[in-house]
Structure formats: structure tokens, C-alpha cells
Length: 302
Ligand code: ATP
Ligand code: RIB
Image (cartoon, rainbow, N blue to C red; front, side, top):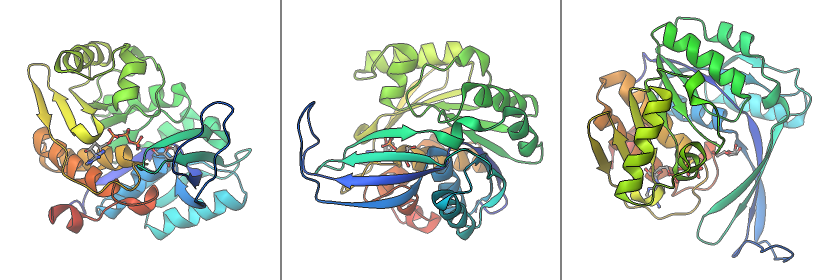
């Protein structure tokens, strides 16, 4: 179904260190963890993996170091049939995310950017080229990389989807005209100053995001509330699917990848929001980032 779609993902590649605990520590408090493990992560690599699991032909563009984590992460991308010819291996140190996860599956994340902050914008633009159907970006690289890649993709008439994670106040005025701009709640707050906790605030924030980014569609990810679509005339809510939440890490990555792919395929933004919700509900029911990404069959079975 998505097999003929060619996607380029420009973004971060991290090793995730996941520490599980019942309750996260307050300032000065010391708590016992229940277990820990390493998982393949990074918003860019997570979204590339989600696209590949759903059947798309994916090229990853980013940077790691020639170190143990970098080599492991590259091998994993290749194992997911992702073209890694756009991933440079000359970074200073591969990105690392320390994720603390509480008993309710809610996370707090600290990211050391390392090589992700060393991606060269000009090289990324040239690696995208013009022969793709979708360019997917996040905010876990330098702002200049996002700006140059969005401007290139928009100018080349390629469907351009921006996932605004993690929460940063990037200059949306310099990356205008994308097809979809999709922040989560905290990213919406960072970009607009408004936390989307009521209908009124969702609409206010969506209008500001549209005004600043001139994106065709604004899709707010609202966690267990699902998502909201603003298409310049109408605000539509899509409720989340019921799920047994284990770990919310990368639910947003999974949502945005599925949303983008369905939009490229059908051009139907409402259907794409629904597919995003289905994908997100599966991701939260599983531990880890890339390991929690669903297949197309799993989504269609909901
Ligand atoms: P991340 O933890 O990766 O940063 P996020 O904060 O970017 O995630 P969320 O808004 O939390 O993104 O979740 C993305 C999507 O996943 C939601 O829009 C929804 O479709 C789905 N989702 C999240 N939480 C739940 C839940 N508790 N039950 C069902 N679906 C959920
Ligand atoms: O969106 C989840 C991701 O954020 C994790 O995999 C971690 O690497 C951080 O980048």
C-alpha cells in the first residue's frame, strides 16, 4: 500500500538509555530504579523506522560517530531496510538520550545531541535531492538544517512534514509553506506560549502556528486525547484509540510518520489523522522507541 512511496528523513539518531522506576525523583531525591536497558532511538531514526515498517522506501539523512553506539544504530537502520548512504559517520560522539520512565509509562528525556548537532545543512539538502515523495523533519538537529531542508523540499514541490519535537522555539517564519506542521502539547506551548488544554487554546495555538509557518495543515498531537486538525477553516478532533499504556516514548514519532505516509498516499488529511492515532495507540502499548513501531497490518487490524 505504501510500497511505492519514497521518503527522506532528516534528523537525529540516538542511543536511548531507558531507566524504569515507580516514581521519578524530585530535586535532591534519590529513588531506586526497577531495571534499565538500551534501545535504538532518536526522533529522526524513529520516524525513519516507522516509515520503513509501514512499507515505504526510506533514506535516512543524519550523522553518527564511528563509535560503538553509532555502528549499532547504523546496523539497526540497515536491518530495517533503510538506506543509510546519507548518514555520515564522522561525528564527534553519537547522540545519547537518557530516558526515565515512571510506573505509568510517562517519560522524561535528556538528550546529548553530539553528532546530531554537527549535521551539515548543505549536505542534507543535496542528500534529499528532488526524487522523493516525502521529506520528514524534526527539531532534534540544528535549526539551520531544518530551515534549509524545508525550504528546499517546499521549492521542489515535495510533500514536507515537520514534527516539532523536541520542544524548541525554532523560527517558523524561516521554514514556511510545509504541507503539515505537527507539534505535541509541550512543543505547541514552546512555539506559541499556549498550552493546548482547552478547545479555545487548541484553536488559538493552531491559528498562531498557521500564521507563522504558513503550513497547509496544523495537526496537534494531544496524547491520550488523540489529535486535532486545523485546515485554515475548521478545527476537527480525532479521539485516541484505547490502549494499554506501557511506554509513551516515540508515540509522537510513530504518529507523525504514519500521518505523513497516509497523506502522501491518499491526499486525505482526515484519514491520515486517524491512521496516525491508530499507529500512536500501538506505539504506547510497547516498550522502547524503534522497537515499538507497528507494521501496516497491525494498524489495519484496529
Ligand atoms: P513522545 O512521548 O514520543 O514525545 P508525544 O508527546 O510527541 O510523544 P503524544 O501526543 O503523547 O506525542 O502522542 C502521540 C499520539 O500517540 C497521540 O496523538 C495519540 O494518537 C497516541 N497516544 C498517545 N498517548 C496515548 C494513549 N494514552 N492512548 C492512546 N493513544 C495515545
Ligand atoms: O521521541 C522519542 C525520542 O526522543 C527518543 O528515542 C530519544 O532518542 C529522544 O530523541
